[in-house]
Image (cartoon, rainbow, N blue to C red; front, side, top):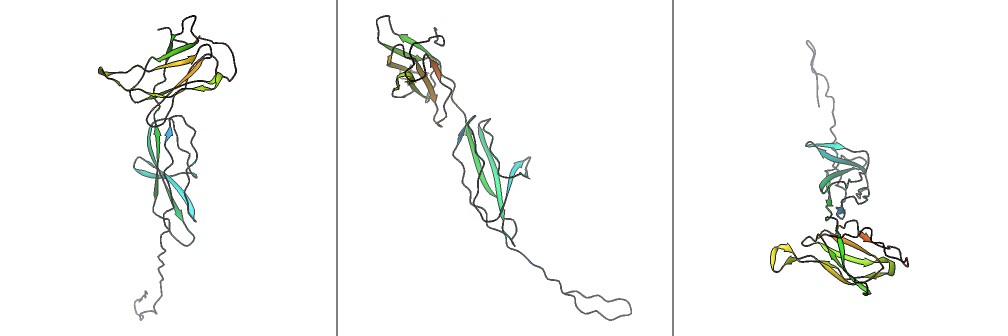
Length: 212
């Protein structure tokens, strides 16, 4: 309550001031998305709640409001935090809920060469020229629907500073192949492809084959 008293007059009646303190809305429910690989297509972030959602990103130590739910960039490897609040009718804006987006790097693109066949061989052997420790290499022959067990590159038992050769055997000669590298984060490279890549396509084209 408040009164006023003017010079030469008595104190006025009390005027009432009512202060209303609204409660904060509860933070919205959020969940970090599954990690992305560099260059993968991302989807807009989501949050669960009953109020109006407001999204933020931290820039130069300040929260900057965004126009709606953001779609994360996957152009670079690393982690990025986004924040979201909700405001229910008759309540104040909630505390910020954090969503962490992780973008993982991809392994180096593999290269390969055909070690065999000879002119009389029906199968061929392919070696990975640039194996990296702990990267898994997978080879297939799409033209005949054939796949092979993946091989994880490990240190050479005779020289820990080197990587043990990664060699695939038993590939059908003349049917091409596709070699893919995948790291521990599950991110894969573009394939090193040689020859036909479509099912039932005939003929072997070795124009991409390394001769080193």
